Every structure is written in structure tokens, then in C-alpha cells.
Length: 375
Image (cartoon, rainbow, N blue to C red; front, side):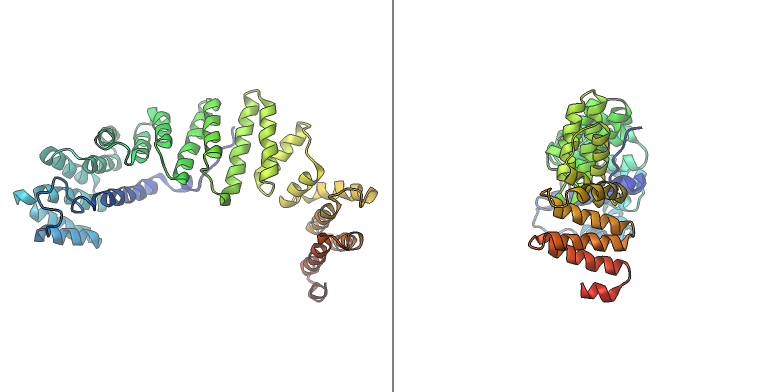
């Protein structure tokens, strides 16, 4: 079973994700409209700077304040006034959407489109209402119409929604969504979903393309080192499966060099050692200690440093790593002695000061506060 990288977004139930995306979608459409038309107006007969007629203004205010039932009542009261009908229909659709009455919202937007003309926002919002009411085919038709009416605005989000309502073509539309332009985190989520699908259906070469896009296009921030390392190791495992071990090991070497503090680096280290790939002693010890795998560190370094305690240029750090591992195994006395060796053997090295701090931490670990303060 392939290792699947899970994003935090995937842990949210699908229904809640769809509901949240509905609010984001409506907010985006409102933002797009405010500089050109009244907030909820399409083909409005009113000048942009003219005051809204009283019924619509009251409905707009109720909608803005979250009183959706009052807004619905106000918009309905304006439906029989011809010059207000288009604006009122659109507001009615928004109100029904906010009330989670999606079938009625879809019907209102249909009346608006049929009577007032097709528009980008009306098609997107009717598509959303249809999607939430289970009409996937109708939703796809609306999203595709919106893409034609106003390409390049929110293409990525619309492609993602089409993928959700058309599982048979989900790979195509998720790929289009990822390539249409998105903020980095959103694109990462989409490409990660694609890798999962590709791996499940056996198209690992395509999964590798998506992993490389995640790594090379800067989709993960510096704070997401665990995710970066996990993606790189997943890509390396695909290389192994494709019969390209040298490329795989090169990727793993990059992980242990660039992300030694991550859990994925430990996985990469194990794979490299199992495959008899060279990994320098210091890197091996660092990764083991950072992943709290103390036993091999103690086994290797106690022997290594007892024979040549000062010959290795990295000896000061190796001693520190050994002492931390001994403390991690609750061998307090031996850890204290190891840190003292650093102070005795390398008094002019910066590691001597670090060793003194480690001794204090070790006393504190043992509950000896007096010696911890004295150290």
C-alpha cells in the first residue's frame, strides 16, 4: 500500500468542506461585484451611484447582517415590481443559499438566468446550489458556462468543483484546477489529491510529476519542512518502483541533508542504510538523535569515541550527541561524564559551553535542581 500524504484539509468532513467553500464562493463573488454593480445586482437598471430602492436596500442590509429570513421576505416583496425583479431574484437566490435551502436557491437563480440573462455570478451560484442539492450534472453545466463567460477569474476553484461532481473525470479537472493558478497552499492540496489518485490507479509516473511540482514550485513554506521532506521521500519511493534506484537515493540524500530534523529524514536514512548507500557518521547520528532513536547512537559512538576521542574533526558534536542519547536512555551518570569529557578535551571549543548547558539539563532531567543551578 503506497504511503499517502494527508493534508489537514482532508481531515475535515466533505459536507463541512463544501459548506465552507460555499461561503467563500459567495464572498468572492460579492468582492468581484462591488466595484461595478450593487452588491447583489446583475443587469441592474439603477446607476451605480444611485441609492437602492427601499425594498432592496432593506433586504441588502438584512442579508449583510445575517438575518437571511428577513432578507428573503424583503426580496420576495420586491419580485412583483418589474424594475426590481432581477435584483430581487438574485437576492432571493443568495438568501436561500444562506439558509441551506439549495433546491429553492437553484430555482431562483434559474428564474434570474431565464428572465434577466446569463451571467457569470448567477451560473456559479446556481452551480453551487445544484451541487449542494445533489444535481452534479446540472452543477457541472453551470460551472462550465461560468468558465466561458468569464475565463481566468476563479478557474481553479471551478475546475475543482467540477472534479467533485464528476468523479469519472476527476483527474482531468483536478489537474486543470492545479494548473489554472491558485494560492500556493491551495495548489498543494490539489496536487496532493492528484498524487493519491494517480498512485491508486497505478499511474505512478504521473504522481511523480505532481510531487515534483509541489517541490519545485515553492508550494510549501519554510515552516512546512515535515511536509516537504515527506513529499520528497514519497517521490523517491516512486523512483524505486520505476526502477530508478540511483535517482531515488539522490532524493533521499537531499532529504537527510536538508531536513535532518524531520521524521521523513529518518525513513530516508533507514532506506539508504538498508541499500548500502554511504551516509556520513555525523549525519546518521544527528538524524537518530533528533528522532529519539538513541540505542544505535550509544552503541556506535561509545565504541567509536573511545578509540579516537579527538581524531575526528566532528568529535565535539559527536560527544554531545552521545551524551544526549545516554540521557535519553535515562543513563544520567554516564551522560554527565560524557559532557564533562567535552569540557575537558575541547576547552576552547564552543562545544564546551554547550556541554555545560547539557550537564545542567541532565541534572534537571534527574530532578537534581541544586546541581542544575550550579552547573
